[in-house]
Image 1 (tube, rainbow, N blue to C red):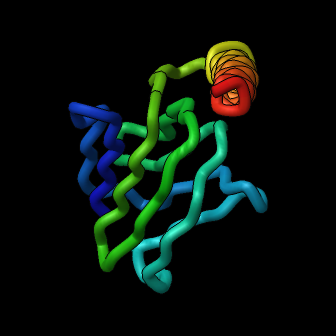
Image 2: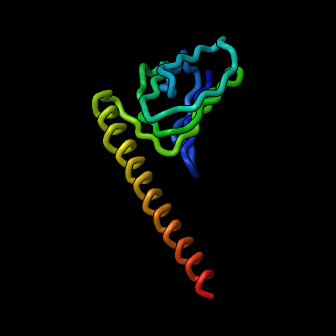
Image 3: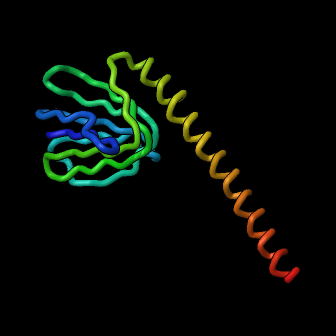
Length: 129
């Protein structure tokens, strides 16, 4: 198979002759083999594992999507970190990706409160007119 890992604005990795790919979806781990049916799956933060002629390779991924079409597997994610030490990559996923997601959710909550306060002030202003 041909594997491509895409992040915004660049190709993170492009590998030919991949024997198998294992990704972590929101429902659990999912293995892709060359003759498996085509599919699409949503990815959660986790580790992508693939077997290439050079050996087993691990890549920490953020949220995204995986698409298998024929012999091509494309993984599109927000962030990716490559490495050889599985423990360090797992720590990167837990620390960097999940912590950033928590901060983003907190930011969205604050913005929602500000939007609500602005709407209340506009309604009050309309009543005073």
